[in-house]
Length: 231
Image (cartoon, rainbow, N blue to C red; front, side, top):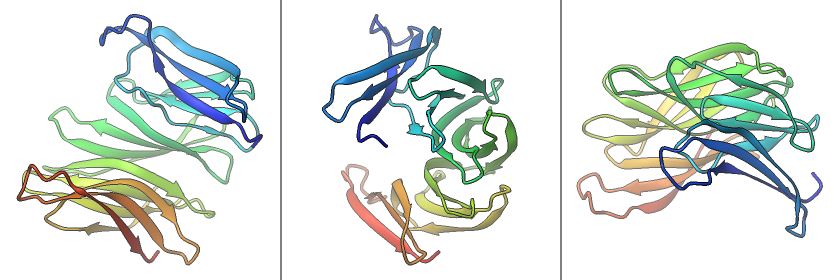
């Protein structure tokens, strides 16, 4: 809101892949000068990623996702609370968005015991307490989450990849504010696709961007594509 920048990520001091690491937030002024920086869970958690979803909250402060954890901070990065979700399973948070009701919606990947991946969408209140959680994807295929966005009514629009032994297709779904699936569609059948971003358009439609590859030619480097649908 002040024209500056927010940087999030994971760091360690040893460069050893198995080393316990820490999450960090850095607030930059518009000129790029560091305003403040904070570390969280220093040396207590390992996460294989290097970039973490983080966003500014309308009421002030920030929300940061780290592995299967959310961290809520004040305006200078001091932690107000942290919550772990499904700690007995592998759950990796892809993105977190603030809802119009003041809570947060979380997009996650769940790794099943027999190897398949599912997509999890959860809603929590302003203190991180879970209101509901839904799992999407079942059977002998993977449903990999890519991106999501929310509309003014609290509906979630999800972009994901549906993978089985023969194909990798793009999927869009609409989920209401209580976690109920309203519709889902698969696009670019028999192509290897991966969505990377999703946005709602002014005419009520959905726009997604991603990469498409020829399923018959594994060495195909792929091409960028843009898909526009109605709502």
